[in-house]
Length: 473
Image (cartoon, rainbow, N blue to C red; front, top):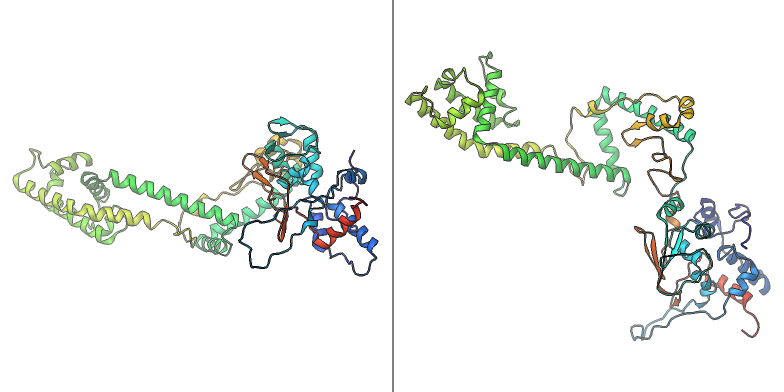
């Protein structure tokens, strides 16, 4: 029977526990070194025992721990000659005082970061969510042996390491504030789209490369670049002399009433290339002077292009055919320049993932839509309607409740203040993708290093070991 969980994370007591709790992190932060100079030997041993036992197996009763304790501590010695002639760090053998606890299944689960505390790991085991070598294990104190494989149901690991799931009222309160800020941003962006575009780019550039929002934007740039490459390749494959001629004739027919057809008329067909637009204008003038267009004005653009490329219609005389051959020859020389203009046009729209620079898109603000306001009282009475009421660009459904059936924050994100506790043990090989781990061996001590994870120093462990060491052992 474990001890009752009373005042485990008390800020006044300030004990450090085997837990990822944020109050435990604060207790660890404010923890000072144990003053051993002003105490008697027994007081030193008692204080050291008290502090270390609060961390190592605090849920075990003192009698259970004393029956488990072994005075024979394990270490390894390096037998090769690599350290010969040099200074060898002493082996912190007494840091192995609580090594016997590390082989317990509940401790192994916590060290592998499959649970947020040893007590939660114990709960997972008792509820049948843990497997050892493929067999359900319901004994938290089961001693693991070298080579044993243990696993936890992935949903339980996500629950243990995930952020807290907010209540529906909390989620809708956050969403209401988000919607208000989003609508304000959309209104400002519509009033001055270029300034909003530049401000957003500068904000992303000021973030660190590891920031999630910046990484999302980098992935967006890469996706946009890949789509542009696909479009460019499709346009290049579909472009031929006949298709280009159809585009020129269609553009000229749209401006048939305009007597002053200039290079600017063909700028869209030339993908914004001024030199190419002038060359296209020259080809069109050649066709216009040959009076071929007047002769074929009753036909469609596709039929005109086919006749001009083949120069085989009986309606054309020899002089017209000669001018058509000159025009098609100019058109053939034009194709290389046209392909280069296509490549330059699509490459100019690409962004740079390194600098986060993207060409300004005048139509970007048209994609931004205002979000309707929420009535929290009505939505609290109808959770199904609340699930559909929020539709922001970065979030579908209420905040933290994308999947309301899950007991953790969805979409999943790690719990706060998790990084200081992310210490992987040397004696366990962990696979977070499958929530499996292998217990390689019992933790040992080496020169200058102990595999037992502890927030306390060697002198504290020395005195704790002295406290538990019995006569004759």
